[in-house]
Length: 196
Image (cartoon, rainbow, N blue to C red; front, side, top):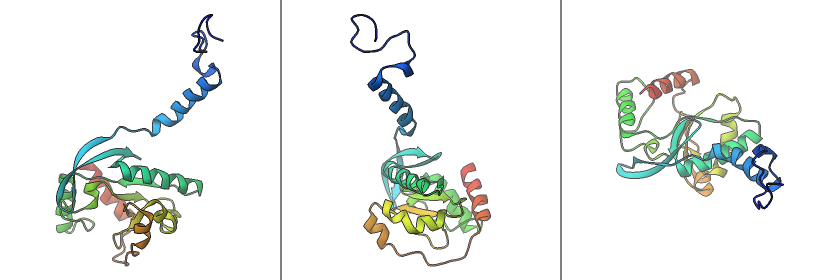
């Protein structure tokens, strides 16, 4: 294989997918794995009113903290193996985005929203999930704690937070039923949020 005297095993006249064994496997691994790599960016976030810097990345088109992204990917992969599809509708929010949602809430035009600086969306650990799969919520209730996620907002079955450990997630009490929101109403509100 290769040119005379070449030690790489690559023949420049052959396509890379026809490269010898180990080289071909390494190239294929890069092709399969590379799309899951995402560059992390540093953004300003808030944790209980305190300004912080957090590393964020994109998952399912949403910006989330890197640790949250890693745990979510593992959870989504496990759900997929069980035939359940998960998706993220909303993750990290800037202070301005949270202010917009909070103002809408105060005017009676949206979901309950924490004051700016106080939402876990602002530290990248809160996710609003797409629950279009009819089995998704049931799957999350049964399995999410294994991946460090807990449902933390009563009446919002789509809101899950990465709390960091399975013990902490399992210890979080299930939210008490509050006013019921329809999936349609939630989708309308999320459309408004993403337009901001």
